[in-house]
Length: 509
Ligand code: MCA
Ligand code: AMP
Image 1 (cartoon, rainbow, N blue to C red):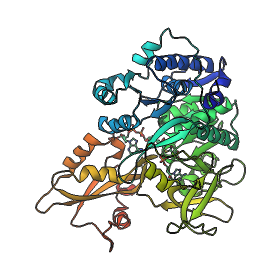
Image 2 (cartoon, helix red, strand yellow):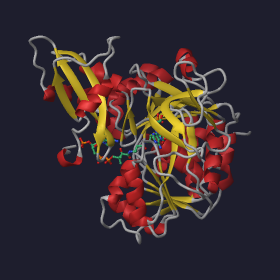
Image 3 (spheres, rainbow, N blue to C red):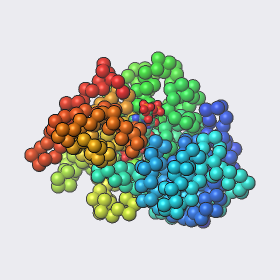
Image 4 (cartoon, rainbow, N blue to C red):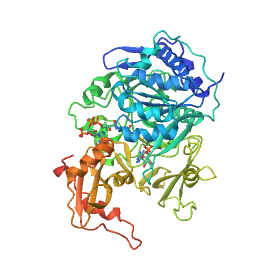
């Protein structure tokens, strides 16, 4: 039966005895071996009662098996729901419950804590670690290495990716098979990926960047990947001489530039470095070119839209811009008040339409209606302008969002935790420039009259409730928050006041 996503990404490689994944221990996994493993996992999912359309949630370490679970989920016709490994049990409960996952796959060490989370929605709990262990792997032993691919339509859901919201409540972005197919095909062509490419993959695989952009492009092209567990400069430098392309968040590139061993010679074998998920400083772009001779190709995307614009492969890659719209994608700049299109050159909200744009937020029709216009244009919450050559520049955000090392952090979620702590009257969480993470989280607290909450107690409260990357790196105290005449906290004023906290000469991280 047809399953367009499986038929595009995986089926063409069935039985191919050529490399798919090169691993840190020097071993290589062929496409045939990988797909046999995926088929075995699909049998396990089916045995758990997973049918087309069911959600398979996974909070597991990056490994070939973790990727095989994605392939298995697609083959079984289910919807993949990858979760950041940094999330706490409290954070996870919401995703599993909200999605009504049929299966939750987690690390064996987390199974005791997550059993009640799975139990609450009647999800089966399976485990998988990064060394081939766990109950999912055990159940796959002896399963047939082929699976009758479940039938799906291009408009059916392939993945549910949760993105935080300005209210602090996460929304599940529904991505269809055709969203993923169209973007992978467009990008593979735009960035000239072929079966000869070896992608250096050091990103996490629970986000669009590492899972759909990096992996799906490689699959469409039939190339292979150096599949590193995480970004580690030593491992990246070791792999560079045999890789041809790399994708990363700006922190990857600033960290590489911090390595004297990262030289023109070290990058000699590479044909392409791509950056996205957060703004790449023009300075980083320049330093990178001076060091390696390569001009980083910056592109712009979102969980809800996959990739929207990209600097060209051939032609000028311009620092400080994210390039023109990708083929098939429409981008317009509109007046935030009226929604009317603005003339070229003016700054406004960025709206996007195309086959890449998601189908809406899972069971949130009001939120969907508020952000996805009937015309099909999606309001990104980013502010930008087109320059004279039709390149998009992102100049800011209308959404209250912090991007730290490529991870999105919604201040509201942290404020909700801080506001309930003893002695806290109110809080405002802001992002300030950070030399390593681009931006980092700072909380400004107003204490209740007569109370004196301590920074350490507040940080502890955050660490119990929030993933590490969301926790404030600094807590400041003030008598009153700056407000405008409408009573709204003026975060711009706070950012201006505290913007130098992590300036390189005083960075403490
Ligand atoms: C880890 N930590 C962080 C972050 N990552 N804190 C703030 N921001 C982060 N991004 C914490 C750890 O918990 C730890 O805390 C300390 O920082 C360092 O931990 P370590 O394990 O050394 O972290 P790392 O390996 O240095 O991680 C930094 C990283 C990683 C390599 C930049 O965060 C990363 O791989 N980021 C990529 C994110 C990504 O893929 N984003 C795409 C999503 P402590 O100091 O207490 O020990 S956006 C997307 O998909 C859209 C569609 C797009 O356009 O691409
Ligand atoms: P996410 O919701 O995690 O997919 O993050 C999407 C957001 O990341 C976008 O709305 C932008 O604010 C930001 N983003 C992605 N790529 C870039 C880029 N190249 N430059 C600036 N911001 C970016």
